[in-house]
Image (tube, rainbow, N blue to C red; front, top):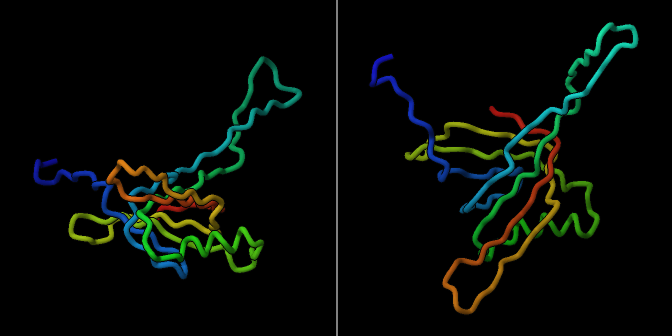
Length: 147
């Protein structure tokens, strides 16, 4: 492969979140984009020797954690408030984490299904600091795909 054909990796700072009816921009951090499959030990009763087979088990996905600076946009808090109040009938939403290149063009997308906010954490305050007030939202979901 010629030197000019090299593909550099994308930078991890240029991303956006899309959730059905929530349009909030400016996330500082996103983590939890992972998937794993349990392994299950299996052995037939009539097998000779001490052999254990490894079969695939349940697929699991971590919660997605989002951190953003607090503004006067209450859309994420209102979504979490529905869960607190037990109004789960319309709370599950599909969404995407979208990775963009330096020009803002979409390059990769991870879609999650049936997500809902399981935890919200407010900022820490310190009168001697000049840091931005950051809120954290944790979203549980039922599946993650790379589109």
